[in-house]
Length: 389
Length: 240
Image (cartoon, rainbow over all chains, first blue to last red; front, side, top):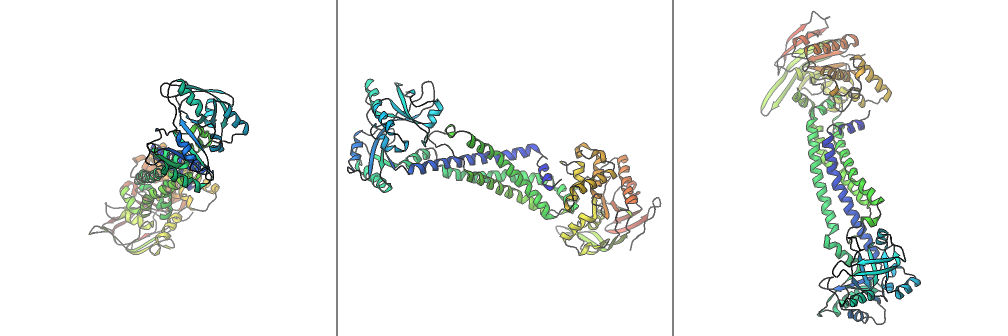
């Protein structure tokens, strides 16, 4: 038998209380690691997007307000020599879902001529570009959505709009974009969408957003100001953002995750410290005479102090591990596409968060156990034994 | 097998409760010979437990000399007293105070964790101690699986497993029925007779005190009477 064994056995003293305290550690720690992993996923995506030098130009009022098609030409005329601007691609939100399912895809109808340039990161080959330009129903699906529905290149795919008149469009997949940072996106040609609108006697002109591919970061910043200035005081004023900021806008709409995670960490520490501290004090009070006997047997005050403190730390670390392990397993074993939530990038396991939460567990364990341990150190054996007697 | 004599000279110990000064021992002096079995009796507040705690190095006197064997406890620091206790004293308490989540053998092994000792030697000592108290077949039982008398036997095994010079027992039969009390007292007598341990036992019960070779009666912190028990072989004991 060792003292470590005694410590472990002590946790069995009141199994229900130990379990509840462990869960009190486990749940916040799990949420903490998950939240930070979401932030890491988002930051990773943002870093990738920053490399693409795309400027998103949308209606100043909201994304649901369309901009006139003519905006594209006006934007292109800002740099006729193409020294700062490579191409402009208009896109219109379609949404839509696979008939018989409920999940809305991020499907966008894009300008046929400029999509391969503005989204060069798709990596379309010459043959695929030719097919994109030749085939009016051509579509490109991100890896996540393709895997979810079991689509292959060459498949015939039907999407149905989510608003009346619930228009159904048929596509043919020419490319699956596995590396897409947004695994549920689906691109198809805007002229094909316009045809469908015309068939229904509707007007399908107007874009949700224009993506402007820039030459470099300086060009992106200058064009951002010039474009918004160009359309200032017109009925269709614009708001231009780099792609990173544009995506962040979606995320911020849900909440400021980094600040949220920070606030959560603080709340976690305080609540768990209070819960664990209360548990350790209760445990200490119940065992005053036992600890007095330990001292009578020859255990030094320091040793008794360390026994009580170690119990608290052990409980904190066990509870933390209980919460962290399923999250680590989940984020490691489950494909990222399945972990995707709304507009967020899929979470990416943050080992720093794991280490951080274990450190928090350790710190909380020490903080919660320190006072009872100090009381045990100070415990006068004779007083405790006399009280018992 | 070892034993130690005890010498106490002009011991004073006062407690303070707010502004009130409570004398527990008021100039007590006595000697207890090595290998003797001494019972201490007296009314509540007479200083019995205080005396036991001072002999066991659990508390320090305000003034006076405390010697156990070769060791002057009154000159030791808190840390030295703790180390001394682990090697030279075995305590037995009224309420046994076993650790409920450990087995009988593990409870007995507890004081040995303070020694640098191979696990095999620890197990051997634990087995011997439990055999002495007649619980060799209850090694793996937890306290809640034992009767009160058996729990006290485990506590006695825990007290003797380190082969201490002195065994201090504070009302060891206070929580037991008459028959079990007799068994426990006979066991203490056996430890005294067979292993020559010096035993100092505090008790309220005259039947328990009758097991001592000598009975010390305390009152208001001083020695009121010092009686030799004619029914037991007389131990050399002297009050100053």
